[in-house]
Length: 378
Image (cartoon, rainbow, N blue to C red; front, top):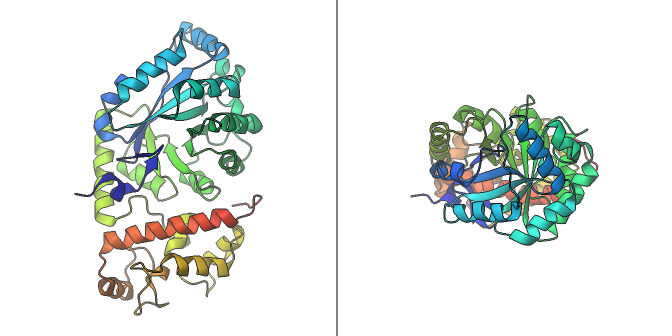
């Protein structure tokens, strides 16, 4: 039986994520009880959104009076502690989606509750009362304040997610880099109508954990997100037990059969930065060369990191292959007799090969995002 870490390789806030499926927050709906009813089919859940200071609580009260579902509490900290307690032992990574009017409001919650949960900054809500209070989409239009909020939370050494709506900030790629530099750990992105092309841009801009959201209603839709940069997918309105169970089961089968549930497309077929793990040596004119130039990564550095990263692994060998090592070989879904012979000689099957390629991609990304200049464009 493959364990959750071997299957997906995901750890959030020090906890192994058992499946890359999450529930996204919906104010007035997604609380501990909602999550527990679906806990068998998810790896993480962001409960809330919760208004955490007087300005946002007053906005919640007005919105509730107008008929919107809201969580209303006289003491948000006490309420959050109760919700967190109810989820203890569930096996679900717990995130708190918070709406505050100032960085200090988020910091106060982290100070009171501690590092046992993920703190998600709601930079996503577009309700006029909330944006007027200084949260939601307002933060996407004032990115310096959003970065300040991230830093305020990181001052308490907690895991920080930022829920964003694509296409609101002036440049989602620059926003992603700003959040990464500020210390964020996760970007949870509602892709709206932009689809996986925007997700790939964000993946190529930062190494953070990416959760793709919006109309993830099927396994095929989830796979589109995974193939273009997502580490996880999240569901909101369609987070019913049947939909979650079907997507979860299909992802697990995919992971067990192929070894890498969110393997990217190859670079020449529209893949993201992770797909460098499948590229050959930079010896011919192909999408590899302009991609390396675009991210500010030299050909020499690319070759060096791959050679060093595979030393002592099954990918180091491969005398029958085009370049004498499986390090330069393509994705398992692309037929190649030479690669198959080398894999057999190395004693690795397809899932093992792809798991090694996943590890190689992680090492490449570490080097790429250590070397890439701050002002690169994708």
